[in-house]
Length: 351
Image (cartoon, rainbow, N blue to C red):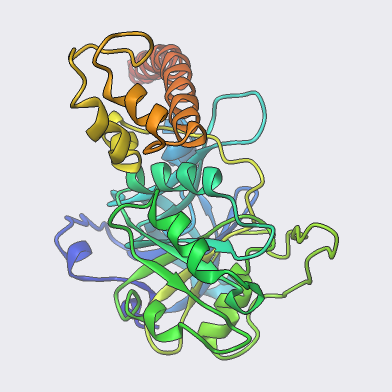
């Protein structure tokens, strides 16, 4: 196996590996409840993390995720391997895991491009796309919007205009696997040493796009429900797939719940740069955009330059981010306490 085909590139070459005897490099291809499938130059292995790594782990990000480069020891005789550590990630797309607990779920790691896939049917949702964009900017990868199923859309230009109004400077690609349309624009972002991820809701066509790029059926594809065009979770696990023309795609299950995990003010400002530009022209630098005189945001809402829906979406994400920060601050204190507890236990054990 050539790791270049699995996304190894010059950026990764600069990382100090510090390999010990018997250790080698692998990449996580898929994950199954604590078990991992990974690839090395010798082939494919089923793997688990070492006891030391599990003991030292404090949180979810300390464990491997799909797309991670890891240091492993292979056991070729039974096609198994042990993961000893994760190499530093240069990017990751995370969300808060579903449910009431505040836990990070790493969707994909070490990605160059985030393809945000939205179908041009009932899946089309500008407010959801705003959320995806905010999280994509935070990931460290470059977002590209992919409008799929263009063959089902009768008002393509108006849909593209709607997206352009909220996705400043982000490339927008319209594709149709049925009509074999737009493939060359997707492949511009792919190639040897590059990794991309498809993200979107169920039924957006992510698995269809993967099969289309591969030239054969790699992922199972189901039809959407006729009454509402909702998907049926065809893909159930995140999986890294090597493309025949070079490059790697990580296909992911559809996301019906997409909660922020972390997002900086900069990422939010990037996604809502129009509102930030308006705010910079307010009379007062600490304007709350409510009843202050000379508020440019309120003026824009009044004259139609800014829609109520977009402004409310901006406020909602701000509130969600503020809540998440409060929860995260508490968790950080607890993690620091747990970290020192482990250190003290290790010191007592040695003495």
